[in-house]
Length: 368
Image 1 (cartoon, rainbow, N blue to C red):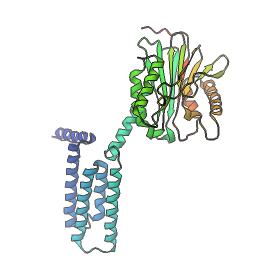
Image 2 (spheres, rainbow, N blue to C red):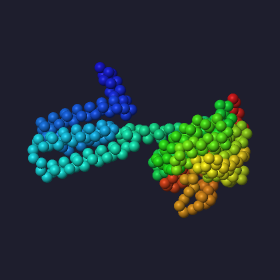
Image 3 (cartoon, rainbow, N blue to C red):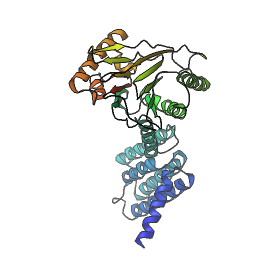
Image 4 (cartoon, rainbow, N blue to C red):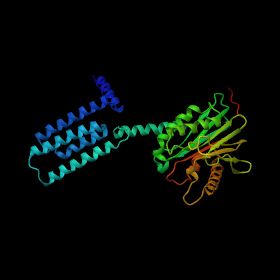
């Protein structure tokens, strides 16, 4: 019997989590029944459940019900509370204040619910945002690198909200000899950029590894242009790395210049790949740079939030990052360097992301 009841309850909760009309009707019915029981108790002994106690049902309804179901629930609750008060005795000063407070509370609860763009109650909206965050983070997961290579990333959303417009997608070939990465910074920041970043990440995730770098960027550009929005553009940097001999190519689309760590010279060099942001023109100008990573060398990619500052220009920001990145590599090598770098960035109103690719050993012995 206990197992049957438990399964029934889990099924009802699962149905409510879907936000379906059927699930909402069931929750509404239960809450209205509980309000009716409260009403009976109030008629029997008003001091046990006065008008103010019905605020609990208003809050529970706000947490569990969509707008129109909540409108029914609040009306039902307010009517029960007011009727119980009127039947109990005359309305004096304190009771008048309680009635006014009840009316204001109902109006505020309905207003808040009507502003939910998802159409779902607050807990379900929060769950939806949490899933969005999880998917963005999974899109940005780096594949396990073969022996002799290390890759890591660190990201912080604007103002620490947990949702960012910076993301990366990666593809490691089946033979583990070729790594392809795209780091993207979509227009916007934080929570406002999250949905666009998720949609764009899904599109790039389906294309990476299937198209040459130039064609991939062109396809991404067409995707953003088809959206037809004024703020639907992004900067991106695409890198293809041969994990056998260390050869790489970098294609930039309006992104801050990559940095290359030269372990022999103990300096970060500025890469010369430049280009136009995607999502603005049908045929953006993209430039490509090529090179070879030796043992101990590394590539550093980052978004503009890392180097931008209201009191300095981009060139000064890049010089600052070169110093910070040099210290990060010197202090502990490539492992943990991305986090050490981004921890030096002041929290601000833009998203920040850092990606480090480093060669830690000789030629890879990966086999297909």
